[in-house]
Length: 294
Image: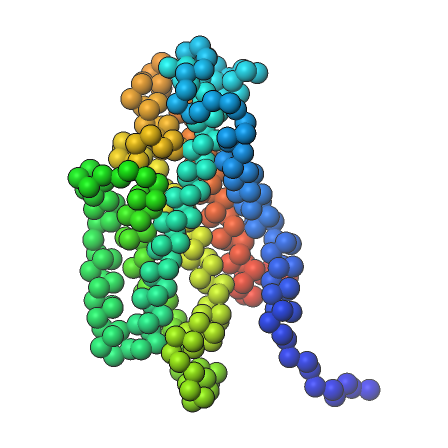
């Protein structure tokens, strides 16, 4: 006998539980998160792993990896492992702050422009296009050289200030499409304020996409910060993976065969950005039913 009872609607909690289950079953997501969590734990535990700082001279010069110095020492007797662990923490901070700033500005501009339309949309789109066509990395180099970067927060603000335009354009396009949906019209007719509609109706329907956008911004900010640090334009006195590579280059570590000085920071950057990319691909499989493997 055919069951004619109506199907129960899928609740938001059930939908989140399903996405969580799919994410835990996706090997790309698990592999990426394990790598990111391991490196994050190493960065957070850096102050507890040794009694000396990344710039302290604690051992013989240019000593290869050993039981006393896991990643060896620099040409000046500094502990490479301690530098690496501190650099990991700095890398995560820059990615989180700069990526967060870029995401916040881009989403705000995109939501407002897409929902309001008209003159507001034209003005915000013009500003977005102006920033978008600027050679962002070249501008960052000029700012860092002439204005100066004195902290990780300062560096993150600079990077985030030039990483939002493409986010704004993408969010604007999706908001423009969603603002004409029935549930948005219903909320508008009941007198709900525009900002509340964006926060409670439009934003949640783009949640998965916004998460993927933040991951991309996170990885891009890390690469930009590492490039600035490698050029010697990062915050002075703040150990980072890019600064490690800069110091190794200036000290001719490659020529002298001190591979344990320049190799770990390069591998660290590749692991973090690669893990973010793999996680992004895995989450795309989870959120997009067409990409799921049956």
